[in-house]
Image 1 (tube, rainbow, N blue to C red):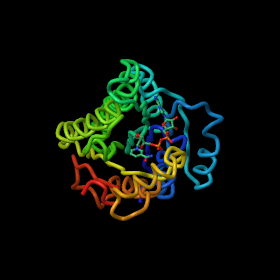
Image 2 (image 1 turned 180 degrees about the vertical axis):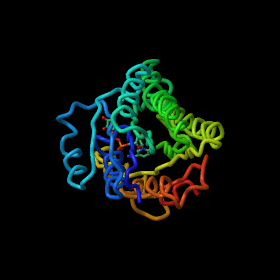
Image 3 (image 1 turned 90 degrees about the vertical axis):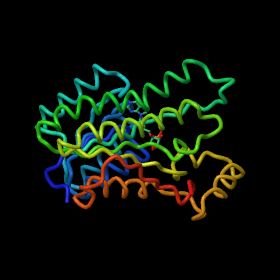
Amino acid sequence: MLKEQVAVITGAGRGIGAEIAKALAQNHANIVIVDYSALDAVQDTIAEIKALGVTVQYYQCDVSNFQKTKEVVDSIVKEFGKIDILVNNAGITADKILLRMEESDWDRVLNINLKGSFNMTKHTTTHMMRKKYGRIVNISSVVALMGNVGQANYVASKAGLIGLTKTVAKEFGGKNITVNAIAPGYIKTAMTDALSEEVRNSMLKMVPLGYLGEVKDIANAVLFLVSPSARYITGVTLKVDGGMYI
Ligand code: NAD
């Protein structure tokens, strides 16, 4: 379905991003991973994707660095000739109630989650415009729609991402570039595995489907949004949350 396409996924060294990269590779897209982890830490992910028979390229880059992201995007275009798909997935948390939150906690989370997506989107759309084709998916969070105690920085960054999604969708609609967001609920990852039984049970009470999502649930949603089936969908935020937001 995505044969000959070039997909750039940030934060794809592990977790949700790695699963998105694999899902796109299974559909024959060539994959570029942009992650700030050292190459050693992402070798397994790279090997798994390579085994699917596509080209994989790795760039070690902090997405919050405007100049570095420009160099990375230019280098990808030089090598592959184009970028068809961009998934802004890199994200961090630094949770504290507002009373205890430091300026540095706010800046770090906003710089990576929101400015990082701005950086990658700005540099990539320049090239997508010329080809009159692009599919951008921003990984937000369901807490962006609900608020969450202890996550003022994270929630603000993820809500900002939804605003960025809608605006870029309007600005680039005429260039055949669609821009959508996904709002995952609680997804089973290393992060949620580390939670206590008590916290996990209280989380599950908020989910009508009664179980945590899996990384493949998010990857499947990304796959749909970048597929020809979703060509008339832009500016939406797709909740993949087991009904948590209802
Ligand atoms: P994760 O921590 O397992 O993986 C994040 C990846 O991003 C890592 O490989 C990390 O190296 C990379 N990264 C972090 N900062 C970076 C930077 N500055 N530049 C480049 N790469 C960077 O996280 P995850 O659980 O897989 O989450 C992926 C995305 O999904 C995040 O944006 C997260 O906010 C969002 N999300 C996750 C959940 C969940 O339940 N896990 C729920 C809602 C939203």
